[in-house]
Image (cartoon, rainbow, N blue to C red; front, side):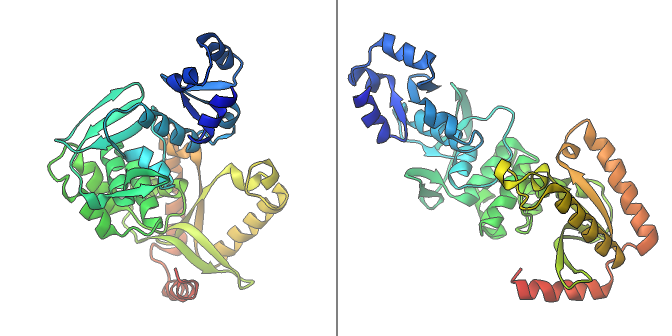
Length: 340
């Protein structure tokens, strides 16, 4: 096993079957190592150190190893693309129900899937290929629009929002899908790029904006809208529609950091601070709603839309449908000082 571990150390923990045999491991020994969990099968003919595999984040890092395992078995040159490139660029992605390793090489647009790898033929320029983590991959703009065309909504909106958070401009996203004008499903891409904004801070906030826009309420929508509280501090509202704020909540902010969450204070302190913040927002003339992760998906989605519309209409009856000019001016000043 010593020789095998030397090979694995140079390949991010990966080992092909032929390399294992060359290192002196017999087929019987390999089967034993797999049964005991010392080796894990990443894909047909490629193994990874079991302890390393179990230590990896299943959403990004394990996918990155699957990508490398797939490339180790390729006979032709491919560029890492779509979701796989997104993971290398550290984009915040919403994973599809059946994640695949995605690779692309030049050709007339078509695709097929074999053994968990989706092979794409598609046109791209040399400028759209970059080196990232030792791999040749599509750049961020091309990656985001590919995800949008491949998976549709909400995956494309999430990817394009994330790309803009990374500093990619809307014009760069538009240029990336320009060559796709006559490709299948390009309307998905066009819609995702038009929707994208750099201010959404997370996957959940993007999904929240999609949900709020689905209400089809004719009022001006703002994201990351700052309001000054009575004590002089600033509260940043995730989404503001007219005089109503929508806050996207997750369990993480109530779970201590020591347990893998975000809370640096006891949960009751976090909740109490949240209630005081909400009170201050109401005092300045804004209503609020809470959006939870389960609200994004059926069957809860329809119920959530009814609740959010009811909350908005209650706020509109009380405060109107247009943000007071004083709040708009104040927000502009706060953003200017914050460089937002």
